[in-house]
Length: 222
Image 1 (cartoon, helix red, strand yellow):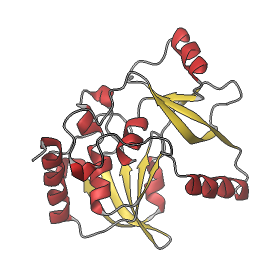
Image 2 (image 1 turned 180 degrees about the horizontal axis):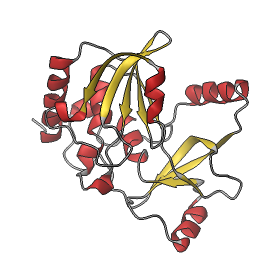
Image 3 (image 1 turned 60 degrees about the horizontal axis):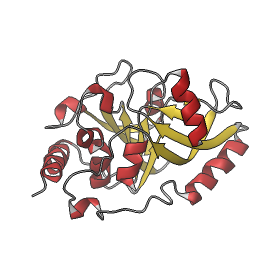
């Protein structure tokens, strides 16, 4: 058996032994957004430490647990705290939570993060809808032996971010009078922030925002 899949299976069995809940939607709550989980109707929680073999977040402000509950009538699983490549974990561990939430039953994934806006038209605090991405220096999470359970060997990345969901987000932003920006998000490894020369390079590549997560999770989810 593929070793990465075997580890994932053990995490899933550990989860099933403790939690009886099937989410339809998964949310990864980025830095500063963890409190959103306090607003949902919570059914259960599971600390990352309590899942056998699960990578544990070391970043301050990331609580490191799954929240299971309901937004309206929709069953959701929220990650309060993600695992980053810069924490020293191998990339397959960094994307293990994404694969685990799919195995739990989630069909839709919302990825959020706190990132740096490098588009000259952006201001601190803006919301940006990711329409495409660039992976820069971060190893592709699909490198290594491919397990058929994860998908095809050479997946198409033309439409990673679902256009129907994008339209729903645009409409809701208008309803809430949120000035929603759109753009291309680029992931670097971190943990150091980018140099001025690197920012110039990223602007030249067509990036609007830069951060240290999200792209690798989107690749795996797609």
